[in-house]
Amino acid sequence: RALTSALLYLDNITVSFDGFRALNALSLVIGEAEMRAIIGPNGAGKTTMMDVITGKTRPNQGVALFAGTQDLTSLDEAAIAQLGIGRKFQTPTVFDMHTVEDNVLLALKEDRRPFSNIYWRRTPHERERIDELLERVRLKDSRFRRAGDLSHGQKQWLEIGMLLAQEPRLLLVDEPAAGMTDQETADTAVLLREIAQTRSVVVVEHDMQFVRDLDVKVTVLHEGSVLAEGPLDQVSADERVIEVYLGR
Ligand code: ADP
Image 1 (cartoon, protein in one colour):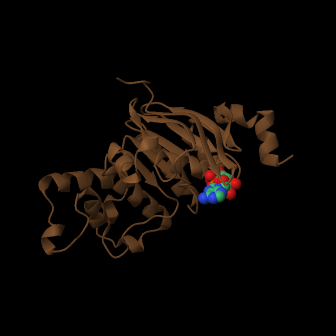
Image 2 (cartoon, rainbow, N blue to C red; image 1 turned 180 degrees about the vertical axis):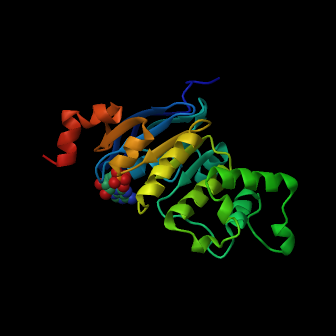
């Protein structure tokens, strides 16, 4: 039986490193097909929060439920990925030597060891999925290029496409706009909004223009817990938030 209708439910999560609380009674709820932006100064606990959700870090205390029933705090990283939680790190990790479409094919295959030419054969279903995914991440025209020759922004999109190949229910994205041109940044906001029509997305971001473009509810973390939550205009007018960002 589902304990909550939220897709992700974090309650009272604490993570201590030698007595220092990187997360301090953090509570956060993400709905189905909701995109949320997480902001906060350096050291606020954003990365640690993502690490808890993906099973990289085990909390000392608290509850982390996925899809109402799955207790993430008792699962390892592989099991959590299997549940449908995908994470995109800041630096894209695509296979530079392979073409764009072969990168997507690799992401579609269960077995990730290309041991023979047969491996690179596509089933009709795989062809269809590759087309769909490349269309989605705006790389159809670059399908035969080597991934290593893409721009930084295109590599980020390719990696997002590779993550979508796994059909995650929740996608965690770490600073996607870092290092992107203004145009790529704007396109990425549109792309993420499209993705969030069918799945939940959590975006950690520093670029406030990008957060504004996302146009979603914002959670401000500070010292390991939630300082403020709401539309960007509202949280950025909040005295406590201003104080934290200006360091007064
Ligand atoms: P953010 O991503 O918001 O910048 P982090 O989650 O990386 O914040 O870090 C939160 C705090 O926890 C920081 O003060 C950081 O130094 C500390 N911290 C993070 N990971 C570790 C670790 N493995 N050991 C000790 N301290 C850590």
